[in-house]
Image 1 (tube, rainbow, N blue to C red):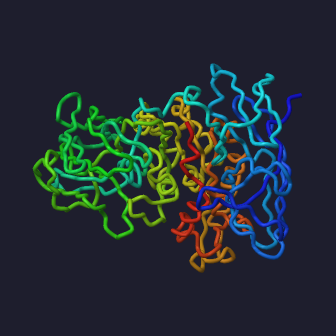
Image 2: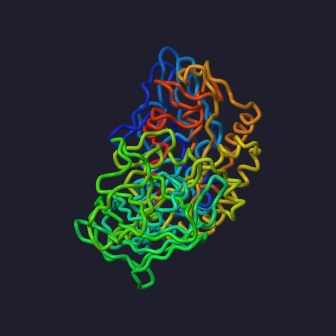
Image 3: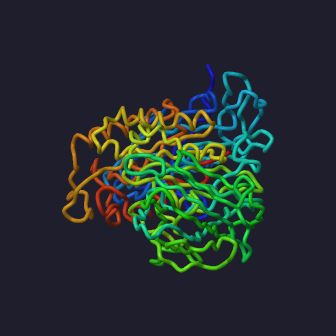
Length: 559
């Protein structure tokens, strides 16, 4: 019989500001517990021992954000640590239980049959494992990174799988809240043209060799994805360090966006950018075919302004084209006509993330930071790796399936270097009376085209929906909004936590595991204040806690 992939002891604690792990003190009822992982099979291993931490005796353990594997019950070597799939606050008298199979790690680099069988080494104390039933050892020595339930070996570049490399265009600099159609609706017949300038940024850790602009021909409404009702004829350019670089589309300066479940992508724009550099996209256009058209909904920066420095969003009749100048138009609009995203050719490989889902995925309830990013997902990803968001409030997975499995959203991701898709729907489906099993089936259907294209897809658990008589400052004064929906939510969360990998998902972002009060199931967490202001979305405090716990962070998404 094959030996376990790894045996050891599981400890609990939190990540430190310098990227380390701080374990709970060995008092107050705290002790590490034994843990064992199954033999590695098809790049995956799962723990085979459940267990319970606690009870917490005399003082709160506080926020448990990370787990860590050690080779001894006390002291010993820290083998690896990772964000808990179900983080939460543990108060006096409370316990934290991990059922068997809670922790599932994956070596994405070991999934390819053609990969040479390579001896890797682990820190001292790890048992020998077996790859795919052969005698090839996993013994020690390669630096390992474990975040969000994914264990990835830092193999030599020649052994890495393809994707996200410097030969692939990936989305960069995105700061908007969500999908096209999620913002302002222009209905003034006199405003048939626009001249907008929007701020973007290169990733913080790699230079950019060239850019491409991506414009949508679709909108995502509260009823699902639809073709736009208007046609845009215009022009675009990139402005960096006082120099304007014109964009061409099929070799011509004209930008033509017609109604379609697809996107218009510019030719490569030869502009070189240093890591982290800010640049601007200038877009001008005339509207035809209707007087009602959607604008992008960008987050409001913490300063209170609706624009980042250097941005403008002008509306009017027959506005002049300023895409070949650095003139800043007079502001007169509430939203932006701008690219869906900007693609970059990077000098070094990088994973790239696509955010799909409802208002929870879009960051509703949070206050945007100085870069216009809001919510624990956008702020957690920051500028450390390429990402784009097509999240749209008040939508459901069922609507996306009915609208053709999000053809435009898939088109925005296909051949764009996307390696990971965050599928943040579910809660609105449950609250619309859709059963847990059907909600999960809708998510599986939406995941299929991305998975078939080689992208990893992540599911989310659903947080509670409650009312409150004291503004959600205590759990005791919260009430479950609908008992039937709550039963389906619990069923969905239990199912997706236990069976996500079996359903084809790369892992689960356990939002509910952190925001739900462990002592009062179905109610929002209240440690340190109200984690929600409406019983539906995390408050700024809730988003800050999710961010601090590292619920979504760049290291989750490895090549």
